[in-house]
Image 1: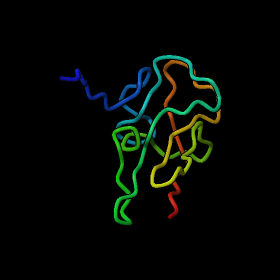
Image 2: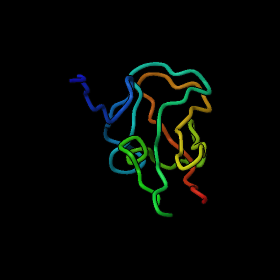
Image 3: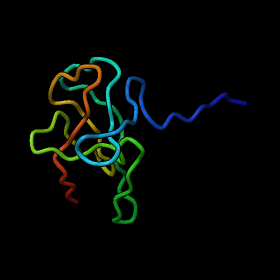
Image 4: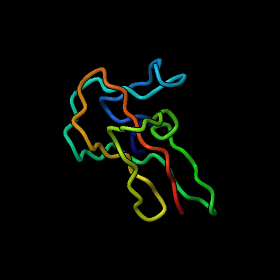
Length: 96
């Protein structure tokens, strides 16, 4: 039997109270520019399904992350250096 533990968020990310809206995704460590953080959304039968990573990242007009389409998934990737305590943000725009 394989020992498998589900982890909804990558190491270094936690959910916290956002000054933008409700809850948000926050860093507990530094992430360099162009770091792929994980899958944020899947496209299934023409529907966009958020993962926990995608469900807690908030919109900002000057974001520090972007969503990169890769087949039927979107990857959350940093576009600025992320320091500990920083809320991760994206400009909402998913196109199929």
